[in-house]
Image (tube, rainbow, N blue to C red):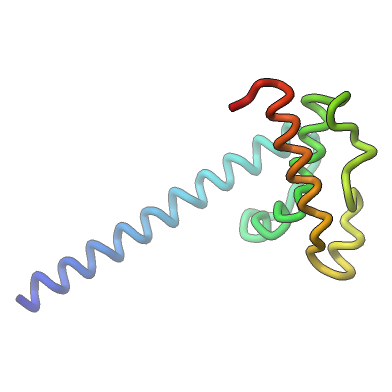
Length: 109
């Protein structure tokens, strides 16, 4: 019984590591794609999640895809100064909303 428990635990740990590895691979793929689309360098993958929470790069992507519906001038905290000084602000969600509006405007489900 003890042997099967340790086997189950080791299999669970192996699955957990595999999911983490796959997540990091997808995160790096997304980072590379965004860098290419935005023509700018993004933070390393370990910092990318926190960086994307501002929605700035998603809003910039939206302004490239649908500039009339999502003008670059409407991106909140474009230089990330507010984020660096005070952290995440509720107005950053406007950037993410702008990205979703862009998706709707171009018919992306």
